Length: 146
Length: 125
Image (cartoon, rainbow over all chains, first blue to last red; front, side, top):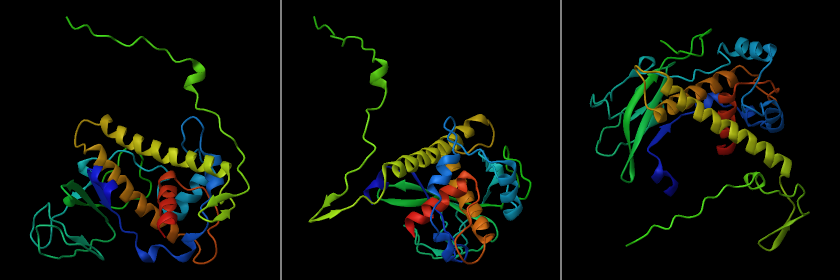
């Protein structure tokens, strides 16, 4: 994929198949969303009712935290070779990392697994791997802490 | 002796700063290969789609700039955006699992990061 040549980072994001039922393919509410975007800020301005409805249904704060610090992240090492920079897979994801022969998996639900990869030459190498604890209910958006 | 020839100063007029105008109606059909194909989207749909994509782009900028507001324990802006995306996928999963198990999703307003993942999911599925 030539367009990836210019990217320094890439993320592996695995959407759990069980979390994407058929009805997720419903039509995206293009017009409704665009109509609710502020012309000045291009941000959503939800009513209190809409905000509370989402937070009640999901237990998630409507406003996602914009700031992430290293204190929010738990660095994890490859379970095969113990190197922090060789994380070859998690959950159902298995990938062979160049320079390492081991295939390994680790599961860490319900934490969010994050691989940060750096583009080196013609390949992406895993730079670091993290687990991010899920957002607890009532979290303030300014700071996300474990 | 070599003398630099600087270009003359230039101040664009107000009219030149505005994007060029464009038509808001489409022809009844477009020639695609050997067949005539009617438009599959309208100009209005393109406009609102661009508005939403701009909102996603603005969100990415906000996340990256937010990293500059902290002095300790910061991570690189690119990495912060990846973390934000991973978190957004998690939010999307939680939201979609809270919906009815069949039938279309009733439209309720959800956060922009969740909408972004939903939009991407529609493109790749």
